[in-house]
Image (cartoon, rainbow, N blue to C red; front, side):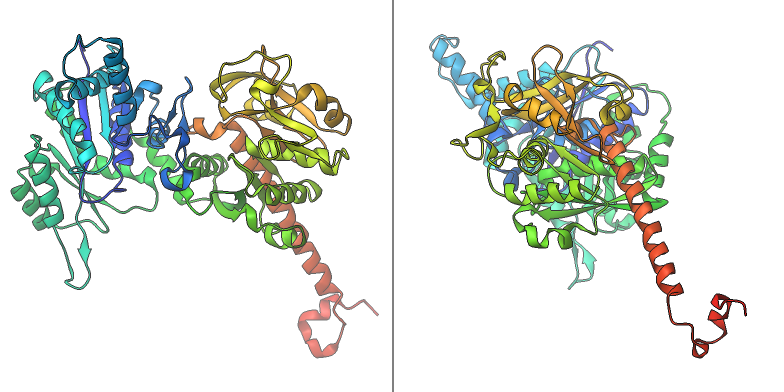
Length: 569
């Protein structure tokens, strides 16, 4: 194929309708037909990237191999496909304007007036071209926000221009909209969809496919009505009903021939769809043989999207064992020493995820101490590894003042320092270690047994490192093992307690590379260890109940059911 074809996904009526899942699901179906796809998210907000945005407002920051801090939708893209995403796959109005203004200051525009058209729309088209390489068959670009928002207008105009450039057989417009059910009237309403399409058409774009979000689906009459008033082919009006798992969406789309419609519009010849492995995965997800309960002790638990990739990786880890992973969110600030056992005793495993700042640290330390002292499988990620080492230094090694300079800049026992404060390591020229870094594992460690190899690569997003020169000897003397490190720069990547059933902390974020068909090894191992504890604890509880039953007073009043326990006379 000489150049890729394009699919543009927009949204209307309200936000959070699932444009990201829609994009990922269509890409999934095209990939199942042997096509090579890439996906891109263009966000209208003025932040340069989501890196400094609050997790409570924006959700998690997803990190790519090349160190880009991106929108969480890129996590959906990677989980649903094999696309390798980079910083070119996400851009914001802020980054677009930053690039334009830098060119203006350099004089690149030769004194011309810099305007939204053609300069901003041209820069957006250049961003789309950055991922349009010759080895890609289809580029899917999602436009953030809602059609009609003033900040999204340049993006809508830019994709209109793309269609003008590549022709109607080189581009497909998919519009995600809402068909709400009004309980008082007892019927579905199509007017919001009609108005949303009217808004889009006023901007010069006629959608080819409508993805209509609805609670329960809709009848043929509703489909025909939408097709008539929105000027869309009837078969291209797709009922995107609510489902119990997002991984069901590609299956729903396949049943309504979404991929066939796309291929027909783009005049692409592709192989037959092979969705069977994905369908089997969804079946296994819905039919687990048992369950495991994981307590996630974090500081952003009031907004689950803050830990989107983490939650999905835990589900994938359960899938690998045929288990349902029940994720229980625990606010770190609520954990107190005197109530810790009561708060955490129900969980089969405990995980402390990444985060920034002092809030909730004391609660995390208490949760980690509980897991260490009670042989509960523990998994610490980024901040979860740092607090794991601090807890060990304080309560096992006797270094009572152990801390991170992130939480206490005046700490005397500085177990974790900013990158630039570390002695004997290269100055990276920044305050954050981002993207993929290699890691060498110790043979026989929890990590090596999970990965099945000695060399790995994982993604990072942090600015504080273990003060290895001063504290490695102390922690290893008391039984902690440094089981993973960067090969060239002397950074600690993984710490473990070999004497514990499963107790591991990693400086990187393994959740970013987990997929439902390819569970991340550490999550698979952690969930497996947690389930082992669950079964062992269940056996112990059954044995205790049996012993309690046998210790009941032997009285004839209990009836013949207990006569078997009477000694022979």
